[in-house]
Image 1 (cartoon, rainbow, N blue to C red):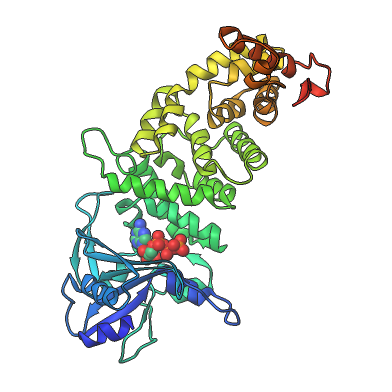
Image 2 (image 1 turned 60 degrees about the horizontal axis):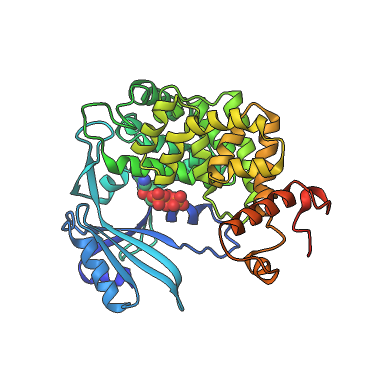
Length: 429
Ligand code: ATP
């Protein structure tokens, strides 16, 4: 239907990017469902008007009033979204007019102008993402492969389109690794060299990924960098991805001193293990805690700065800026807290992510054990009686209430009722 709408206006319409890649990679015997489509409109004999994509999206919304339409003014792109639609389930279609991008300086936000489909594909990250499938007549279903993407798909190579690509947009370094690991592809050797070159010239100097002092940092770049880090760290295969980023020197894009040494690697694996055991339902965003552990490796004064520049959530920024203080405090206090009730008293002001961060960074096994026991058991233990019980027993409500309850809880935690290990939920009347 989108193709018909485009044809009526004398335009070509193409499916581009990941949708074409995934169709070509799919098992021909299995049905393929694409929930996220990128469409590009191009003029027939000349470039389409810059607003063509938006006009097409509007015409589709008129036919599908249930769809939500979002228009992004600056780049003249539109998104149509069906969420839990009875017919379409969830579907996201981005529609853009074929365009060229110019980077006023490396890692800037690109400036955009309407152009041909070939130019549009040339601005893309990798050959395997620069394929287009024509949806309109004549020659509907024709595959446009200007840069050898099909060959690279077959030989499982992540290959960049031009040597400057990573300097223009360093988030592509993270994308290269993400696709390589996810698809089981190899980063083509010359592309890997381009990455190393971009890292050594741009990222290490810190003027690409996080902005050099004196220049207004392109906020969209950090948002995209954070998004890529999130994709990588929340994927099941985050370990090989991080290892590959480290081998390429790309972690220095986050900070020039950041390196994946054995100690950091151990901390990351430990927090991953703890999170999977402690929080299998993923109540906490695991990727965020992995990133916290990564950034906690930096010097204390740098942690908050990098977290802020990456526009991490506020709780992450607070955690990273207060970490060294909390860590110091707990390192001193935990050895003086042999009883479970003392550990509870000590740890209860902190949230779970902070405690995990402190634990995995601690060199003391006994501290990790205390924190783990607090998180998994002691923090959930309740006093055997509550305020209602005390009232029933004839106590008058007042300050002593709180004291009695606290002492009851401490006695329960410390096993003074002798009802099993640390008196878990024991002690009847
Ligand atoms: P995924 O399955 O992970 O969503 P995708 O290829 O659809 O993969 P998107 O991030 O949705 O990835 O991007 C859609 C398309 O936009 C890509 O296939 C690529 O052609 C292009 N693209 C996205 N980010 C960049 C970038 N930083 N530089 C150049 N092209 C990009």
